[in-house]
Length: 259
Image (tube, rainbow, N blue to C red):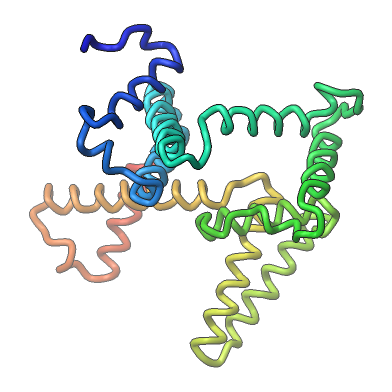
């Protein structure tokens, strides 16, 4: 068979996946299931986030393609099992976008972002019926991202601090409770409360806690690598340095690696 043409078409991707899944296709692709692809899907999501964090738009283009591959592959597996079709995926998301934007596709008026978000939450609540408004937030999300998501969700219905000062006061209160905790169980609980409140502080400041921590991790990685390079250049072992010498080296690395 000849190689696929029209590589800029969505249908070409659909056809390639179908061909890979056929009996004479690729052994690896034929063996995949929804469950076996879970880690691949998660990894591709993180690689998309990494490209965004780096502001590497060429990489983002490539990583979005990898993520789209996962979606089409899941849809193909579902089609073969009689679970649903790719057309169902498209129908559902298109219908959802139209129904949740009545200010664009209907007669509802929404002139500001706040009005849009208020209408969006009201529509989602109507769809949920009596289910909790937090039930639609996946508990499989990373903890910091989940914390931000549920805090944002309840803030839409007014369960929120009036200003950032109130959140900062709550943070100080939680830190104090952590200091007073008497055993490991209490410390773990209070530490969780501190993290939860910190996410709230970040949310009020427009900071994505998950992204901020990823960036902090990356800064630490680069600075520690710089410290290791400096040790190699000077012929010393990092582990043999005193704590004071290590801290001095850390300050040197911070000056050398700003971000």
